[in-house]
Length: 194
Length: 176
Image (cartoon, rainbow over all chains, first blue to last red; front, side):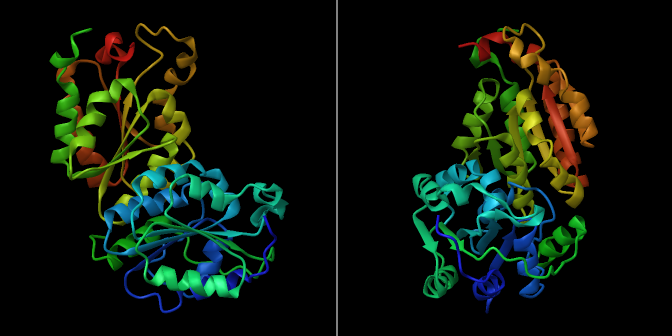
């Protein structure tokens, strides 16, 4: 796939700007969690410090449980590759307000920028399309990002998007890391018994 | 054992326990031993049945369900327990409830030796993952154990596994 130019922090900020009360965000471990924290803390973020390969499925369980709210999974290419089967699983259920967005820089940033499979041609958009996602986008420029942000605001069909970001490593912004507390405050923000 | 399928009632007792426990999502990898329970879940309009490509997906599904206020159960065969191990870290770290219902292979009357290595370590592996482990050997035990497992998983927010012995399942059910 084409190497990306988009700035990951700016892309995350664009996606969660004016997010509204109903947007729930599930980032993957590592960089996308730091990106989301950098965009501003929110109890409706379920930050991840582990569970590699599980992010899209956390999003599915959440979307099925909360059909009136929008759920955005925003993860990295390495994390998505570890849970590729979950795209087939989501393709069966297709919750209309679930978006799976992959920040693809073609490398494993957290472990030292080793090449990921997308750099050798693994086509995540093609995988999502073949798994039955009704909307599949390949976002490579500012116009595409603006379009994705607008679609996320009015989400009505299960959406997959690959966002081609540059392979850079901005300074880490670390959110809270106590998993029980991240869960507790997320549920409390939804009005559930903490 | 080896009773005709229509006289086997424990899967229905399991299903009723899940319903009484307000389980609203059920993840599974298709499994012969769980056939009837899976069919009951698929037929229930108040349950999201989620067919998984690997059991590990179901662990993350259960975390998401609980974040959104729903209870999720995960059905699998003993080989699937091995596929869940790292993802169970998510449940331990965040104290998510995790109810696993496991049909055992690799023990009684097992024809396939490839099932034996994982089947033989299911209990210690689950205990290392800080799961509470129950085992049902007789049909009469299933309902009581399931009831307790539901209460413990969702009431105490912890990992609870119900193992269904291969002897309970019977070889006719899983050998087609």
